Image 1 (cartoon, rainbow, N blue to C red):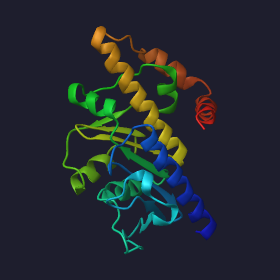
Image 2: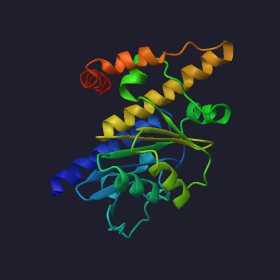
Image 3: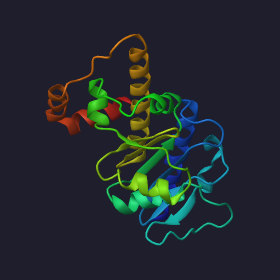
Image 4: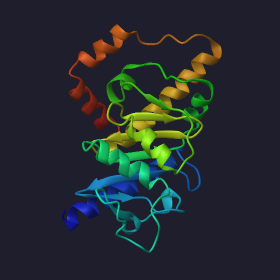
Amino acid sequence: MTVQLEQQVREELTKYARKTVAKGLVVGPGGNISAKAGNIMLLSPSGFALEDIEPEQWIRVEIDSGNVLDQEVRPSSEVLMHLFAYRVNPDIQAIVHTHPAHCIALTLVSKELPMLFPDQAALVGDIAFVPYVLPTTDLLANAVAEKVGDNNSILLENHGLVTTGKNLREAYYRTEVVEESAKVYLAAKAVGEPKVLTDAEYKEIQSLESEAYRVQLLQKMK
């Protein structure tokens, strides 16, 4: 790992941490995000509001050993959730854990978030649900780790949302899309039975040049 790569990751984390707050996806010191830089992850420190973290304050943790390389400040209390996810699925390069209001509200009344519109289908796909588990525990870390091999977006009942990506931008924008999906679904459900995409319609979107479509979406979201 080069110093230049680590600095780039630190700056990206700072950028998207502030975006999560600006978009109302977390409040106060809630939420935590991380990204890989070689064989370590850089994780938000404990007790910090995300918008207050400066590039040099992200905590380095070795993924294989779990050793914390910075001792001045403790890593986020959800450090195990991030570590276990990276270990289970090496393709994951970034993780965003937030507490979006509509996502949490949805988990209080439903155990599914249907496929509603093309961007959701292309960028997110099937969304996993995890029943309520005490936060910050290895129980939650294991529950999330069981899902990250098949799902890039995981709703945590009475808690929030976890999204992953091959880079931080992808993980972050999945958070935005899932929150928008939850918002649309709850609004539609309040006045009637929502018309969702059928399996055939969903597969049709997936059968498009989905990678090109996904990249195009991400470009628009810069």
